[in-house]
Length: 331
Image (cartoon, rainbow, N blue to C red; front, side):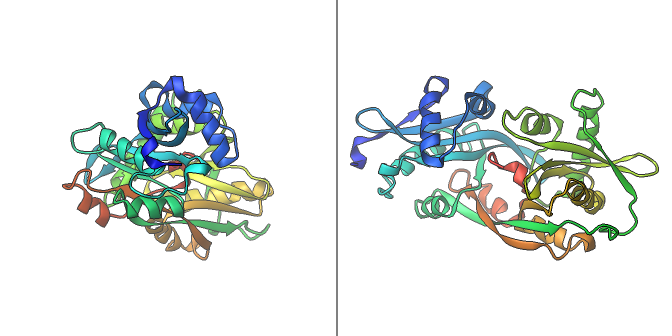
C-alpha cells in the first residue's frame, strides 16, 4: 500500500459496522453493536480512521471520555483504545503510515489545551507504544503489572481473624449510589499524590453494571460485627483464576477489601486471584502484609500523549498513576 493514497476521516455511528468489521479482523473477536454503543455513543467516545484511495477503512484510533483527578483538581481526559490497523497496512510505520495518520488526526482534534480533553492515556501493546513514542506522540509513564495471589488453603485464612463479611452489591438499591460515592471521596482524599481516574458511582455503574459483555460481580465488604461498609470490589470470574477489576475504599481498608476478594475467589473454587495494577499501586499493595509475595509479570505499558499541553505534561510525568484493570476497556 502507498501511504500517499490514504487520508484521515472522523468516524461515528454511520461507520460503526466498518469499525466493528475491522475490529474482528485485527483482534480475531467480534465487537457487538452494543459494545460499540457502550464505548462511543452519546458523546462518550471519539474516533478517527484512515481510508485508502478506494475508501476502505484501514486503520482506527479511538478514545473514551474519562476524568482524571490530581493536584486537587478534576481534568477532562480521554482513554485511548481500539487502536487497530489492517494487516496489509501495518508495514508502513512512517509518519505518513496508516497508524500515524489516524493517531495524529485524533490527537490534534481532541487532545490539548484548546480541545475537549486535556490529556490522553491508555494501555497500548508493546508495538503500539514503541511506534507512538518514535512518532513523538506518546511518553511512557511506567509499567502495568499483572499480580497473582494463590487462593488461601482451607483453615489457613489470609490476614488472620476474619473481621469482615461480604454481600453482593445491588445496583437497584437507591442507597448504592450514595454509598459508592462516599467510598470514592474517601479514596480520592487518601491518594491525592496520585493521578487517579475518577471511579465514582456513575462511572462504576457504566463500567461494570452496564457493560454489555462483562460477566462482572460487584460486592460490598463490611465490618463483620458493626456491618459498616469498608469498601466495594468488582471481580470477574474465570475458569481457573478470578480477576479483580477495581475497588473503592479508604486506603486504610484496602488490604481488608483485597483479602476479602481473595476469599471470594477461593470460595468459588478459583486457584487464585489476579489483577492489573500500575507499578506504583502494585508497590503499595506489596507493602501490605496480607498481600505481599504476589507473583508478578509485565502486563503492558501505560502512556500519555505529549506536546499537547506543555504546562501539564511535566507534572503528569512525575506523579505516580493509580490504575487497575477496570481502567482498561478490554478487561
